Length: 160
Image 1 (cartoon, rainbow, N blue to C red):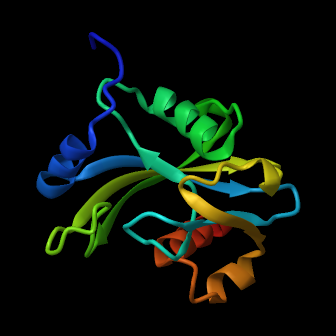
Image 2: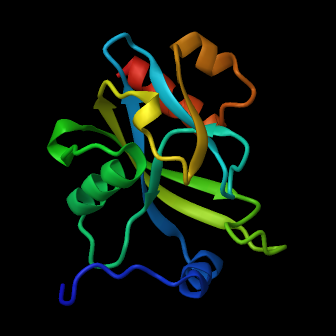
Image 3: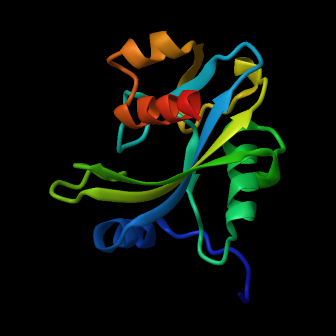
Protein backbone atom coordinates (compact mmCIF):
# COMPACT_ATOMS: atom_id res chain seq x y z
CA UNK A 1 0.00 0.00 0.00
CA UNK A 2 1.12 3.47 -0.91
CA UNK A 3 -0.51 6.77 -0.14
CA UNK A 4 -2.66 5.95 2.85
CA UNK A 5 -6.36 5.42 3.30
CA UNK A 6 -8.61 6.65 0.52
CA UNK A 7 -11.92 8.14 1.64
CA UNK A 8 -14.28 8.05 -1.33
CA UNK A 9 -16.34 10.97 -2.54
CA UNK A 10 -20.10 10.44 -2.41
CA UNK A 11 -20.11 9.90 -6.17
CA UNK A 12 -17.31 7.30 -6.03
CA UNK A 13 -18.88 5.54 -3.03
CA UNK A 14 -22.12 5.27 -4.98
CA UNK A 15 -20.25 3.82 -7.99
CA UNK A 16 -18.84 1.11 -5.70
CA UNK A 17 -22.29 0.35 -4.24
CA UNK A 18 -23.75 0.19 -7.76
CA UNK A 19 -21.04 -2.12 -9.17
CA UNK A 20 -19.50 -4.17 -6.37
CA UNK A 21 -19.91 -5.61 -2.88
CA UNK A 22 -18.94 -3.21 -0.10
CA UNK A 23 -16.49 -4.52 2.53
CA UNK A 24 -17.50 -3.52 6.04
CA UNK A 25 -17.03 -4.22 9.73
CA UNK A 26 -19.90 -4.66 12.19
CA UNK A 27 -19.29 -4.15 15.92
CA UNK A 28 -21.37 -6.42 18.15
CA UNK A 29 -20.99 -4.93 21.62
CA UNK A 30 -21.99 -6.53 24.90
CA UNK A 31 -21.59 -4.84 28.29
CA UNK A 32 -20.70 -6.41 31.66
CA UNK A 33 -24.43 -6.90 32.39
CA UNK A 34 -24.88 -8.95 29.21
CA UNK A 35 -26.79 -6.22 27.33
CA UNK A 36 -26.25 -5.57 23.61
CA UNK A 37 -25.77 -2.11 22.08
CA UNK A 38 -27.98 -1.13 19.15
CA UNK A 39 -28.35 2.18 17.35
CA UNK A 40 -31.34 3.53 15.45
CA UNK A 41 -30.02 4.04 11.91
CA UNK A 42 -30.62 7.36 10.19
CA UNK A 43 -28.99 6.34 6.88
CA UNK A 44 -30.05 3.88 4.23
CA UNK A 45 -29.88 0.98 3.92
CA UNK A 46 -31.71 -0.23 7.03
CA UNK A 47 -32.78 3.31 7.98
CA UNK A 48 -35.25 3.39 10.85
CA UNK A 49 -34.11 0.04 12.24
CA UNK A 50 -31.99 -0.80 15.28
CA UNK A 51 -28.62 -2.12 14.14
CA UNK A 52 -25.16 -2.73 15.55
CA UNK A 53 -22.59 0.02 14.89
CA UNK A 54 -20.18 -0.44 12.01
CA UNK A 55 -19.08 0.89 8.66
CA UNK A 56 -17.15 0.50 5.44
CA UNK A 57 -13.52 -0.54 5.12
CA UNK A 58 -11.62 2.05 3.05
CA UNK A 59 -9.12 1.32 0.29
CA UNK A 60 -5.56 0.81 1.66
CA UNK A 61 -7.00 0.30 5.17
CA UNK A 62 -6.16 -2.90 7.03
CA UNK A 63 -8.85 -4.73 9.01
CA UNK A 64 -7.10 -3.62 12.22
CA UNK A 65 -6.96 0.03 11.16
CA UNK A 66 -10.59 0.00 9.97
CA UNK A 67 -11.68 -1.62 13.24
CA UNK A 68 -9.92 1.05 15.34
CA UNK A 69 -11.23 3.91 13.17
CA UNK A 70 -14.79 2.60 13.35
CA UNK A 71 -14.57 2.27 17.14
CA UNK A 72 -13.43 5.91 17.28
CA UNK A 73 -16.05 7.13 14.75
CA UNK A 74 -18.99 5.02 15.89
CA UNK A 75 -18.30 4.60 19.62
CA UNK A 76 -16.02 7.54 20.50
CA UNK A 77 -13.65 5.07 22.16
CA UNK A 78 -10.25 3.51 21.50
CA UNK A 79 -10.40 -0.26 20.97
CA UNK A 80 -7.93 -2.43 19.07
CA UNK A 81 -8.91 -5.46 17.03
CA UNK A 82 -7.00 -7.84 19.33
CA UNK A 83 -9.56 -7.01 22.06
CA UNK A 84 -12.36 -8.41 19.89
CA UNK A 85 -13.54 -11.88 18.90
CA UNK A 86 -14.10 -12.50 15.19
CA UNK A 87 -17.64 -13.81 14.63
CA UNK A 88 -17.29 -14.43 10.91
CA UNK A 89 -17.85 -13.02 7.43
CA UNK A 90 -21.43 -12.37 6.34
CA UNK A 91 -23.31 -11.28 3.23
CA UNK A 92 -25.96 -8.59 3.67
CA UNK A 93 -28.29 -7.68 0.80
CA UNK A 94 -30.50 -4.58 0.78
CA UNK A 95 -33.05 -3.40 -1.79
CA UNK A 96 -31.98 0.23 -1.40
CA UNK A 97 -28.81 2.33 -1.14
CA UNK A 98 -27.40 5.25 0.85
CA UNK A 99 -28.50 7.82 -1.77
CA UNK A 100 -32.03 6.35 -2.17
CA UNK A 101 -31.52 6.03 -5.93
CA UNK A 102 -34.32 3.75 -7.22
CA UNK A 103 -33.36 0.31 -8.52
CA UNK A 104 -29.88 0.21 -6.97
CA UNK A 105 -29.31 -2.45 -4.32
CA UNK A 106 -26.55 -2.65 -1.70
CA UNK A 107 -24.46 -5.77 -1.07
CA UNK A 108 -22.17 -5.80 1.98
CA UNK A 109 -19.50 -8.30 2.85
CA UNK A 110 -19.52 -7.72 6.61
CA UNK A 111 -16.82 -8.88 9.00
CA UNK A 112 -18.46 -9.09 12.41
CA UNK A 113 -16.49 -8.65 15.62
CA UNK A 114 -17.76 -9.20 19.17
CA UNK A 115 -16.50 -6.76 21.81
CA UNK A 116 -17.05 -6.75 25.57
CA UNK A 117 -17.32 -3.06 26.38
CA UNK A 118 -19.09 -0.78 28.83
CA UNK A 119 -20.09 2.48 27.17
CA UNK A 120 -22.20 5.45 28.17
CA UNK A 121 -24.96 6.03 25.63
CA UNK A 122 -24.63 9.77 26.22
CA UNK A 123 -21.05 9.68 24.89
CA UNK A 124 -21.97 8.07 21.55
CA UNK A 125 -21.96 10.12 18.32
CA UNK A 126 -25.28 10.93 16.68
CA UNK A 127 -24.38 11.16 12.97
CA UNK A 128 -25.05 7.54 11.90
CA UNK A 129 -27.54 6.67 14.64
CA UNK A 130 -30.12 9.07 16.04
CA UNK A 131 -30.52 7.08 19.24
CA UNK A 132 -28.98 4.11 21.09
CA UNK A 133 -30.14 1.59 23.62
CA UNK A 134 -28.87 -1.44 25.52
CA UNK A 135 -31.11 -4.49 25.09
CA UNK A 136 -31.05 -7.84 26.79
CA UNK A 137 -30.99 -10.83 24.47
CA UNK A 138 -34.65 -11.90 24.62
CA UNK A 139 -35.95 -8.32 24.20
CA UNK A 140 -33.64 -7.78 21.23
CA UNK A 141 -34.62 -11.05 19.54
CA UNK A 142 -38.36 -10.36 19.85
CA UNK A 143 -38.28 -6.67 18.83
CA UNK A 144 -39.59 -6.21 15.26
CA UNK A 145 -37.68 -2.91 14.92
CA UNK A 146 -34.31 -4.65 15.46
CA UNK A 147 -32.81 -5.64 12.09
CA UNK A 148 -32.61 -9.37 11.30
CA UNK A 149 -28.83 -9.17 10.76
CA UNK A 150 -28.40 -7.78 14.28
CA UNK A 151 -30.53 -10.63 15.68
CA UNK A 152 -28.37 -13.14 13.80
CA UNK A 153 -25.19 -11.67 15.34
CA UNK A 154 -26.63 -11.83 18.86
CA UNK A 155 -27.74 -15.45 18.38
CA UNK A 156 -24.21 -16.30 17.22
CA UNK A 157 -22.60 -14.57 20.20
CA UNK A 158 -24.89 -16.29 22.67
CA UNK A 159 -24.27 -19.67 21.01
CA UNK A 160 -20.51 -19.10 20.85
